Length: 80
Image 1 (cartoon, one colour):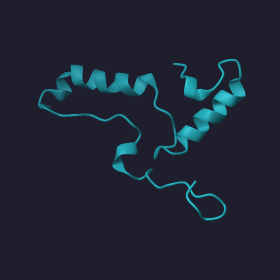
Image 2 (cartoon, one colour):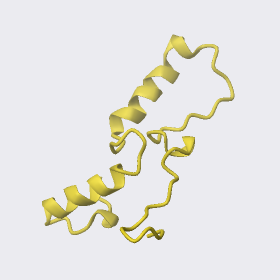
Image 3 (cartoon, helix red, strand yellow):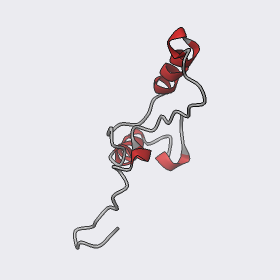
Image 4 (cartoon, rainbow, N blue to C red):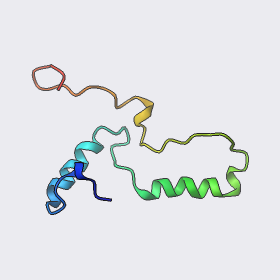
């Protein structure tokens, strides 16, 4: 999926750099893929999830777990 925040669709190197920048703030250090969501859907549609009720599932690579919420600091020691 192309997002405007990833830059100009014609510049693949800029797109890859933007993805790397975003992924560096995700605890698992990678962008989510459609397959990550599909795997949860398969689980929820299976008999393995028969005892699961009223649950919320967050598929974010650990962002809401809080470990990526540290502000970036520039070379002068101030928050960027």
